[in-house]
Image (tube, rainbow, N blue to C red; front, side, top):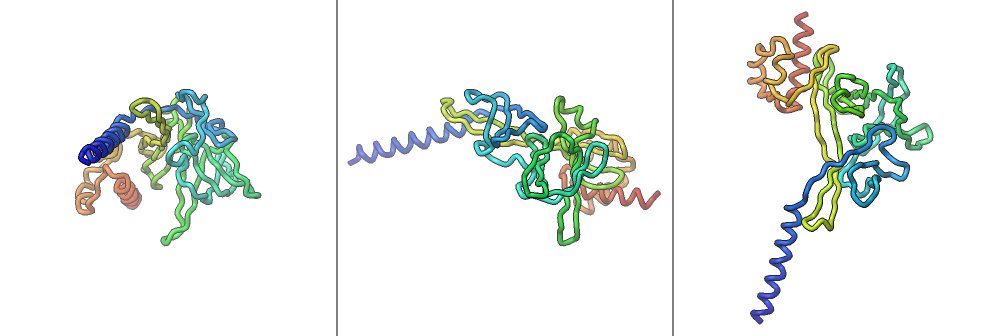
Length: 252
């Protein structure tokens, strides 16, 4: 009896240890996605470089997470690079390939052929209609991503605005014995300050990082302290820039 119990305990203990090792020793590997209109294939796959034993196509259903900024369709005005409106469509933004998916008048899903340079998403809220703009033709942003264009989201309007750039890639995990593989989306987010027509890349969010770019920032420290704002947080920095722009506008 004791031997059976002991055998069962050892078996369960081995399984527990093996499972723990399996999760602990998952090795991350970054894979490169082909971006732009050719990044997705008609069979619902991504063109990914660095795969082993499976060519260079990886079906979306094999990747944990979503390639889209949001999965639901949202109303958006699309623009060409020349600034002319392409029309208002139900659209989604694929952050993995940096391409726009939209529906035509018949409800058929289409992918951008490279002509869309800007989207302005529209959403109704309890406070009214809100608009979020993103563009992929900002040269000062794109030069940091050789061979691809990135959509930069304007987080607030005004003289000074925060730009947010998503880089969504596929990571690969290998098990202890290399018998299991898993794929999942992972994000790297970069921030920029847009000051009139000047673009400055930020190493990180924080007061010390934006001081060189915002004249008179030191005079706002009392307001920041009273408001309990932390400029290292995206939400607080956006709120501060809205306030900063209003103050600058009223003083001119």
